[in-house]
Length: 304
Image 1 (cartoon, rainbow, N blue to C red):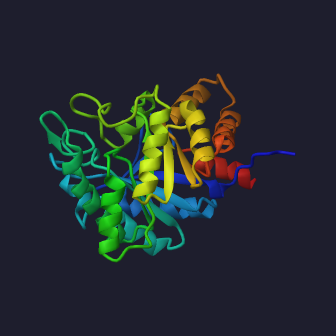
Image 2 (cartoon, rainbow, N blue to C red):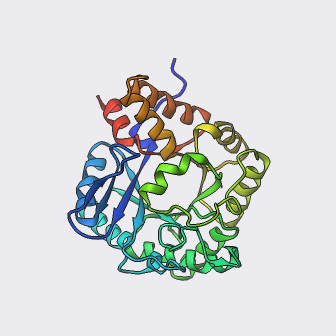
């Protein structure tokens, strides 16, 4: 009689690839998650696929950062190298890449800075170049997370022009300026050096704006739309799913993960039961796909 069911097929597992060799550094605020060099991330990718999780999303930590985030679209960058290595070692694993500038810019913002703030239009060309570099390296899908207006159209246009019409785009369509991102910024080394991201990410109080943002991304060519974070925005996930006939992804973000891990370590909760309850609630709200750091642990339980 159970109405909502979970499967490892529902999950996308985030990975953080960094420069160097022999590196597997646990992220203090995200137990069980790591910054890994390309040689180490290959073994991790094999483990994920063996567990039945069909897809990963890659985030890069470059050796060099500058104001324009030029490492983001370097054909020899860490993400580009990781894509090639993973697709060579585990060709069946579906590789998605995060398309954003925050990990690559010296100021930690998601685009080009002009007059003290991110310039939306100047950023679009660079985001499109970054997406193209990922696809040329072998990425199966790109996922722009920057929240610049028009970036789906810019990426779709360049990919089509370069002969990659079949590569899908998963757009971070309703991405809120959330306090739940803290641990991720440690993991991706992407904390803004000044100000915050509220000028381009969404106000947590807004619901109708989320529907407008989703609609715009669909019109520009998004194949999958995403709501981020998940737990405080289950109502948004539900309304987006009811309103649009599109696949919906939800990102069970780092803060949501770390809260469970911290409480579990202190013995205050049944960590595994809470993990499964959270993931089930996201599916029940309407998400077809869940990006989650719990993917491996949940897959082990579901496979047992």
